[in-house]
Amino acid sequence: MNADEQLVVDRCEELLAEHDPKQTKPADVLGAQYDAGLAWVHFPEGYGGLGLSPKLQNVINAKLTAAGAPLPYGRNPIGHGMCAPTIVTHGSDDQKRRYLRPLFTGEEIWCQMFSEPGAGSDVASLSTRAVRDGEEWVLNGQKVWTTLAHVARYGIIIARTDPEQVKHKGLTMFVVDMQAPGVEVRPLVQATGEAEFNEVYFTDVRIPDSERLGDVGNGWSVSLTTLMNERVSIGGQVHPRGSGLIAVAMRTYAEHASAAGPAARDELARLWIDAEVNRLTNIRASQARKQGTPGPEGSVGKLAMALLNQRIMNFSLDVMGADAMLYPSGYPMSRPTTAMDLSNPQKAFLRVQANSIEGGTTFIMKNILGERVLGLPGDIRVDKDRPWSEVPRS
Ligand SMILES: Cc1cc2nc3c(=O)[nH]c(=O)nc-3n(C[C@H](O)[C@H](O)[C@H](O)COP(=O)(O)OP(=O)(O)OC[C@H]3O[C@@H](n4cnc5c(N)ncnc54)[C@H](O)[C@@H]3O)c2cc1C
Picture 1: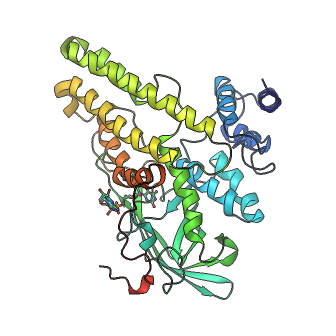
Picture 2: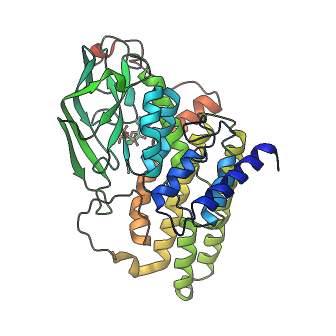
Picture 3: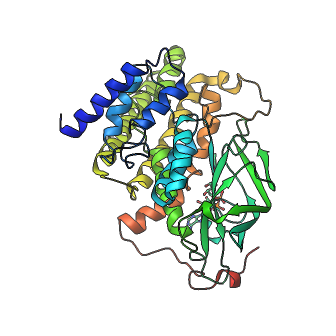
């Protein structure tokens, strides 16, 4: 064990001795974890980290969860996966001090507002406008597919601040108070029957300039921090061997083994191996990542995970036969407080269809791999040298 690993192991032991997870409120354990620099170990000291290699986070998580400590990610997935890395990289000291701790403990949920009805894969073409008015910005426009906006206290938003620049240049990122006057959140129901995500409308919403993330006009490079972390957050998580959706498939097969036959057993073995290959590839990518924002390996993991999850759930519903047509939770519209409820195979089957869309579609991941990893010629981009205001749009 090297000195850094010894340091985090010692800190975990101190944390557990002073805050026994079995007798302490989850938010208090998580708060103490943040204060000990064990929340995101690669973040700077004072902001939930110790400035060490991100691979030590696996050591910390394994040690803390084995002692019954809560895992914070599920309750605030967008906050953890996308907003925190963006704030720590581009936020002011005041923003980091104010936002990171309650984000980590789950006392304040966050959302990410990038996609619009006319701007998804090509998010840099977005239309939501922020216009400067003294020390404030006035925001007008609409975002869509905003996961957990209905429970979010804050969100990060990318808006157009200079329409006369080319599309990637006239953008700026802000933190938005989701309770500010003029913010309206409306549910959007998914195939699962749940409204995990929403439409968000902004009418003359005032944002103090101190809530800008990064420089004016630099929003595209700030948003790349968010997007690269999003892909790792969706596709690059390292779970214990045999857990997650492959465990659902194993359980489903065991319950229906007599009807399933040897071909199904063969297919299940193939899926288990592929899940393990994916897991090991993610471990290798996380070991290679020394600090900071991940590179295109995040897109590889995300692409592979989306396709694998869909194969696993197709298999699971096939072995269930007619039972697969029953939907155990009924179909009333609900607004869950967490994303990605995979608690039963039928719901999981419907939910994983979104894996190849959310966080960048499978085609977009292939474009990134082609251009940035394989060095193939770029996609045709006819609007990249024209001011955004002159680009025709519907
Ligand atoms: C469950 C879920 C949760 C989401 N949560 C959020 C959120 O919290 N915040 C947020 O901002 N967004 C969120 N999104 C939105 C998501 O990022 C977009 O849906 C995604 O980027 C695709 O954009 P689009 O839906 O506008 O599709 P489009 O961009 O219109 O794409 C339509 C089709 O065209 C293909 N296509 C587009 N451009 C190209 C190209 N250049 N080359 C090849 N094919 C191309 C796409 O692959 C796709 O098949 C969420 C989406 C889902 C499904």
